[in-house]
Structures are given as C-alpha cells and as structure tokens.
Amino acid sequence: MKKWNVCKPDAASQKYLSETLLITPIISQLLVNRGISDINKIKAFLNSSLAELYNPFLMEGMHEAVSRIKKALDKKEKILIHGDYDVDGVTSVTLLFLTLKELGAEPLYYIPDRLTEGYGLGSSGVEEAVRIKADLVITVDCGISSHEEINELNKEGIDVIITDHHEPPKILPEAYAIINPRQRACAYPDKNLSGVAIAFKLCQALGSELGNAGFWRHLDLVALGTVSDVAPVVGENRILVKEGLKLLRNGDSNIGIKALIEVSGIRKERLGAFEIGFILGPRINAAGRLGSARTAIELLLASDSEKARELAKKLNEANQERQRIEKNTLKEAISKIERDVNFKDHKVIVLHNEDWHTGVMGIVASRISDKFNRPAILISTKDGIGRGSGRSIENFHLFEALESCESFLKEYGGHQYACGLTILEENLSGFIKSINELASGSISAEDLTQSLNIDMDIRLGSIDYKMAEDMRRLEPFGEGNPEPIFCSRGIRLAQPVRVLKGEHIKFQVTDGARNFEAIGFGMAKDSEIELAMKNYQAFDMAYTVSLNSWRGENIVQLKIEDIKPSEPYRP
Image 1 (cartoon, rainbow, N blue to C red):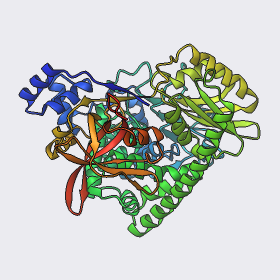
Image 2: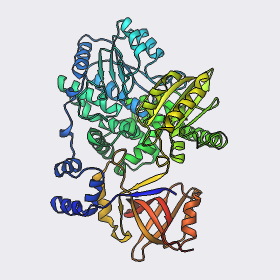
Image 3: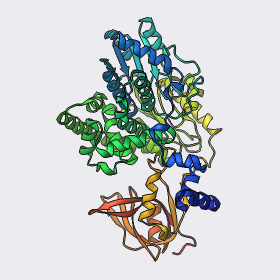
Image 4: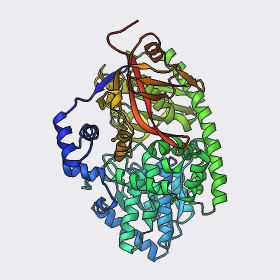
C-alpha cells in the first residue's frame, strides 16, 4: 500500500488568511501547502493576469534574436523553423509560424521523423536548411545541445537562433542567439517555462517591437503545449495556461484545436488541464509517435473547418493505434522486468528490445516508473543503435545521471524527470551497470516507497458544492500546482460497488450523515483496494473533489486516489 503523507494543518494561517482574504479555511490551507502564504502572492496567484508577465527582453539573447529576425523580415530572407515532434514542439512551430506570417514573412518548417531521425536538430534538418537555401534557422523546443549541426549551418552561412527549455550543456553551441532561461548567463526570473512558452516570449518581443499584437490570439497553443509537456503550472506558465484555457472554453481557439475537441467528445466549457493532458495532447502526440508530426502541424495551421475535421479524425485513429501498441509494449516490458530485473541491484529499470516501437518508449517508461516507483528507461534497438526515453522519480535527476554516464552515450538530452538518448548497442551493458551504480549511492529505500501526498484530512460531511466551486479558483492544476487531494477516515459503502467496462469502480460512500458518489479509474483489478473494501466494515479513502454534470445538474463527485482499511481493523 502507498504511504500517505498528510500535510500538517496550520490553524493559525488558516484563520489569518480566511479572515484577511475572505476565503475558506480549506482554500487557505491548500495555498499554504503550495508554499503560498504571503498575502500579495496569494492575490497574484488567485487573480493572475497577462499584465503580470515579465518583459521578454529580460531574457538573455532576446535582443539579438529580435534584431536578426527583423533583418530577415526587412530583406525577405528565407526562414526555416525547426521543431520537435511532441506537443510542445508542434505547438511551438505553429505559434512561431503563424506569428511570422502575420509579420509578413513566408516561413517554412521542419520536424524530424521520430522513427528515422530521432529528437532535435540533426543532420537531416541541416540538409533541409541547405536544400531550401535558408538564410535563418530558428529552433523551437530543441537545439541547445546541437553543436555539430549548428557548426555545419554556420559554415553554410546560415544563421541560427536557438529557443529551447531543456538543460543546457556545459559548453553552449555557437549560435547567433540563444534564448533559454536555464543558461547560466540568463537572469530571467522564471526558469521553468515550457518550450512553447519560450517561443511565445519571442513572439511577444517581436510583437512589441513591430507593433503587432496578433500573438495574443495563440495562447490556446501555449496552454496545449505547456500542459502536455508536464511543465510546472506555476509562474508565467500558470498565467499563460489560464488565459489559453479561456480561449479554448469560449470557442475562440484555433480551428484545428476546435475540430480535435469535437472529435474527442469534450465539452469545451469544462475543458481544463486534465482534458489537455489526457485527451487532446495524446492525439496530437500520436502523429509524431507513429510517423510524421506533419499531420498535427497541418491540423493546427488549418484554415478550413472541413479539412480540420478530416485531419482531427486521422489523429484520433492514430491515437487508437498508439494505445494498442503501447498496451502490448507495456505487457512485454513488465514480463521482461519479472524475468530479468533484480530490484535489489537495479534501482533504475533499463530495458531494451529490438521489436519495440520507438514512438511509445516515453509513455511506457512513464507507466513503468509509476508502477514500480523507480526511474525507468526503455530503449528500442535497430542495426546496432538504440534510441530510448526515460522517466524519473522525485529524488533522482535523470539528466544529471546521463551526464555522469555520457561516455556510454551517443546523444542525450532532457531534464530532471524525462530524457531522450541514443546509444550504441554494444554500450548497453556498461550503461546499465554505470547508471545503477550511480543510483545505488543516491536513491534511498524511502525514495522507492510509493507515497501519496495528501493536502488535508477532513470529515466527509465538510464537502459541499461551494467547496468544489471554490477550488476552481486554484486552477489550472498540473505539475507544481497539483489537484488537491483529501482523505477521510472510517467511511463506509452506501451502495454496492459497480464495475464499469471491466476497469473502473463506482459506488456511493457515506460517513453516516452525507453520501457522495465516488469513482476509481482503473481500480477494478487492484487487489489491495478490493481487500480493504470487502473485508473491513470501514475504510479510509484519499480522493479529489470535482463537479460532474449529470442530466443538466452539477453534482459533487469524489475521484479515488487510494483506499486502505481503517484502524483498528475489523474483520
């Protein structure tokens, strides 16, 4: 069972903030739990607006980048935008493409094929820039580690502007300008921007210089890319996502996104970070995972509703195929773990297989990391080369680990929680041994214990419609601003458990005074939860609180995170 880490209540702060800001004690505690207890910071958090965005010219390299792009616009130079094949990269390309078009340019774009070229600015991107006789290449969501490729472009007389948010290497490429708030010379206050948010800052700077405000219309793209990339939804990311969601909900969004919302069956008025992260994002990602991401770009650049619907249907079908491949790969990976992995010696799970589809390596690595609560890297090998993706846990910095093992790697990139890499097959055993030796000295037994962070221990009877409404003020939820989790003790079933689609459970729960509907997604086959509910009269439940629309009425629904028997146990 998971270890429950329940935040210690701060009664004094609850009282002070409630009385000062006229908010409920529960909302007060949730803000304190997120490290926001200063009155002015709370006001900024609850009432954040676009006016609070930082000046983009505070970012290192921005002046040089804007100056070079203005020159390209004035001289009608050929501009190539080079992106990545995930949602962050696709939305970044689309955003910059539309902005440059609005400023009078005729830009072109290039996104590498995940299956044949791999991540980032590679040799094929260089060849494309040379082939079309580009004068300027602007990278989005990539490029920060592409030394050789940028040197090649420089030799061809092609200037390069890098915009990226991944961890910079110790020595930066010799680009015309580099925009990345993580580089050491950059004093920009917010270091956690997504790739598309950094592309937006460039568009914001161009717009302010050239008197064009069209970039504000594309905040829906920024929200889509930021949430899908699991970037922290705090600081500027929070403001951009919040404003982008308004466009999506109001129907003022990109034609392609509207078509995808329609095909996905989402009610746009309740569209939030969950719908982006688990419904829209995976469909856009599916194009790049299984082949070319051009279909996704074409959708987001579509100006005709009928064409957009056709492309949205294609992405929907691609996502269904992705789900099938992912399910089979996960099954094979778990079988491999049971057969080959010794958890005592392998604190980092590294798996490789010749038949695995490179397009789902990252998703399956994430599933395995969640299931076994340890870092996981999956690698697909072909012709002596392995391409893989990794996901990590809280106390293991994956990018730094790869830096320590770089002698075994051909290429790598990423950040604390996710990475991509290329490795020669002959180096796999050395890499697996090296990264696990590193992990054995830095990952403790406690780090590997599955835990659940809970905001508050509350009575079930304290939940009502107003509480659920109040929590919407904390949205959008996501990395860095998680959806609040509560727990209640000694509760009982008010109705028998129903199993939905063989995977989910649904029932009524009560504390004797009030009843609520509870739903547990994917919990139908969880033996520990089944034991807790069947064998004991009372149980403790961790859950999130939301409003669910049913037959025109909004009802409070509890989404189950975990269930365990109440103390003392009653067989």
